[in-house]
Image 1 (cartoon, rainbow, N blue to C red):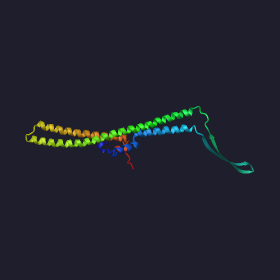
Image 2 (tube, rainbow, N blue to C red):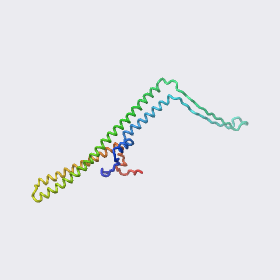
Image 3 (cartoon, rainbow, N blue to C red):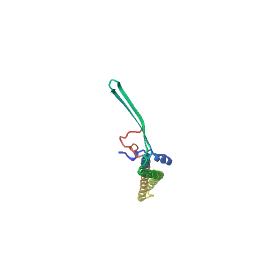
Image 4 (cartoon, helix red, strand yellow):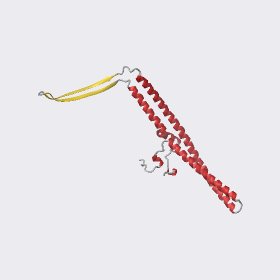
Length: 216
């Protein structure tokens, strides 16, 4: 099984890099962008029904012994162009074109909304990650200070200057500091995965799943 410590997420080093990466890899943005492209292509397809259509055609034939005793074979070839112009479509095509344009506009707004939502999510996750890492440094200092204080209380207790209750309180403060450090490390891990999800980095190749081929 993969443990969190075994996962090395390729997170960007700056917020600007994270926002640029999200523009390319964020799943919500990608879905919205492909949906818009589909609607835009459909709009062009419907518009094409209003345009003249020109087709080129050609045929070639060969007949053996068309006139017995006169010709051994005869060849024939025809090349031409065929044009058609839509004159009347009862407004159905233009109605579908208006609907297609409206759908494409809606899909484009979905792209804008997806970009905005991804940016908000990334900024929030980035701030959580920065805060968690700052808290880890603070908690590490607190753990070290609590350890030194505990050792001092125990030494004083050994010579009778502190009571057993004082020693137990120092042990509890040291334990509380360690728990706070573990909580801060957990918050950092959660923030990393939240940021990675917004960046589209939670694929098997980045999560350390066994049996996954290496990227080249």
